[in-house]
Picture 1: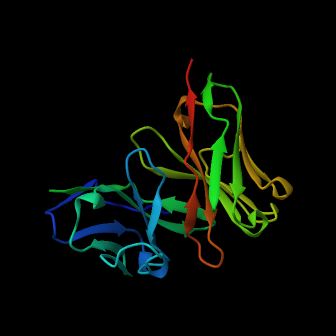
Picture 2: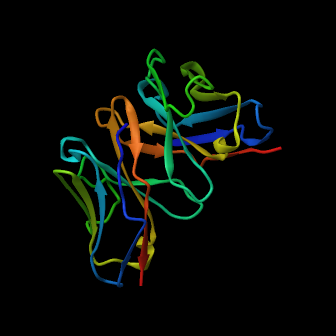
Length: 106
Length: 119
């Protein structure tokens, strides 16, 4: 079965840039989506199809995908960006989520 | 307002059964593919099951295959998950999630319903 690998945690200083990676075999050939989840809340889509932002998501959120790694980039990180982030793809009619990354804004 | 509202969670003994429901509103439910996604306490997201807009195509995660059954009633704007032979490892918050038309991301999520399997 297909697996997605994310770092358990990423820390970023307030106002700096955070990068969260999502590794998978030839993930660059798949559409990668990213979700943000805050404690006690349902996930919210922040990036779809590698690099597209849904309406209402700040331009500070961006994404890329190539080779074996997809990356979610959060520029000018704010305290409100502190959350768990999950990447997701579809593989053989199965949705696959990465293990999740806890973003801490220092 | 586009909304999904889950219900039916609760405490059940190992080996027991539970039926979850997801009520959709604010959109044409019959046009959308739907999914169940769960999250064990303190853990990550795990996809559980998919059903096409007509209900004719269904997929399950290996962890629930043969025990869970997804279904929908488009006339009632409702999605269901029948869970049998429940195990402790099925303890989780269960979310229903809408799959976007054309693209394959989950664009709308419910607030979740908690299922606890324990004696």
